[in-house]
Each structure stands twice: as C-alpha cells, then as structure tokens.
Length: 160
Image (cartoon, rainbow, N blue to C red; front, top):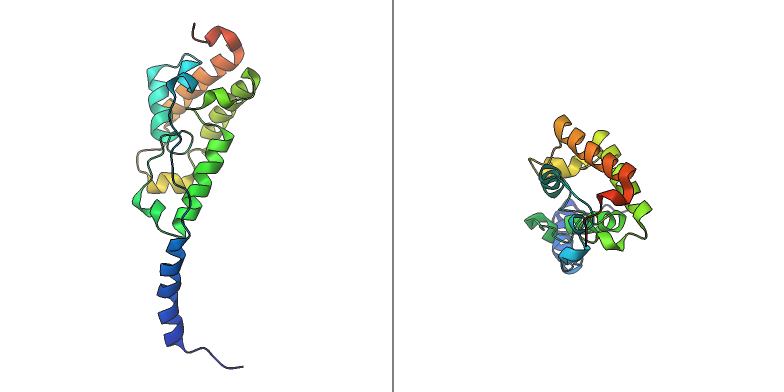
C-alpha cells in the first residue's frame, strides 16, 4: 500500500476547509411578532424575563445573535442545528406555536428542571458566551415563577 505524502495532506486540508464554506446553513431569524411571545400570554416578572433573555433567548427565540464563528463551516452547521433544535423544542417568542396551554406549562416546568440540573444553558454555550450562567438565586426565581404558572394555569394569563 502506497503512503500519501504528508505534503499532500497539509496542502489538502486547507483546500477542504475552503471548499466546505460553500455549504452554508440558513442562519436567519423569523420575524418577531410581540403578540405571539411568552410575555404576551403569561405574566412574567422583569427579573425572570431578564434571566431568560440573557441565558436562553439566543437559541430559544427568533432573536438569535449569530456570532462570527456561526458563519464558518463546520462550526456553522453545529450552531445552526442547535438553534433550530432549540427553537423546535420551545421558542419563547413564538409561544402561540404551543399546541395547547398544558404543553406550555410542561415546557415551563422543564425549563426550571433543566436550569436546576445545570443542563441549560448547555455547557458549550456557556463557555462561548460569558455571563450566561444562571446563579442559584436566579434559578430559584425562574423556578418559583414557572411553577406558580404551572399550578395557577389560566389565572396567570394576561387579560386581553
């Protein structure tokens, strides 16, 4: 078996990295319609809203801030996939997309659970985005709010 010279590998790797830049994922943000947002459907304390916006909205909203590295393949593929998957699970700015109010309550309860377990925001996101950690006090605030909503049901809805 003939060995490929190292110089061909060294020359080929940059060429491959340049070529894969042509495979670009869709890095877009759907329009934000305020009447479809979580805040339009449930009462939310400003401190909880600030926590969610700082630590969750980059992936779980239509207002993703796409950093420079999200435009460089293959990282762009990973970032795009994560944001699309996150929006598919729950999108705080498209809360009306929830199938029913019970599903919304389940998402809020799961939000509390995942933050409490340290699984949200994900560790790789926290490494790249300083200041997105959720402190124990902030976790308690989000959980107290979300559990109140889940228990109260429709009584926490904003009046029309």
